[in-house]
Length: 166
Image (cartoon, rainbow, N blue to C red; front, side, top):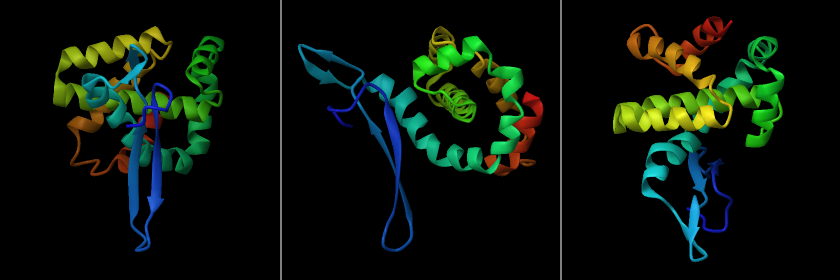
């Protein structure tokens, strides 16, 4: 947690001397009381930590499947989504898609570990910032959840996700 960081966070990865990847989630306060930064436990547990750590798993897949992600641009990257995504800090389609996927996976993990009500709160938030497309991705992720024997890793499932998005 970093009190001097913006509200939100980012993912950091460092390879140590032994070649092992160490992953960090650096998260800023989500508010302040009397000019003192506040880190809401609920916000941290059910959203930011899951989301920022998720970048370590999803970002390499974005790079691996970048050309296939680009093919979805025309279908989904409308003027409205471009504007909403820009307000969230994303201007390129591949990063918008990555964020949508991360937010959808965060919601699925939240639902499993903290309940449907918490997950619904996150869905409503995403819709309020123009990222309602997460609902479509959540539906596709159910296929992954229910077929883990067919898809042992998320990398195994990613091409199916992209086909379903088509």
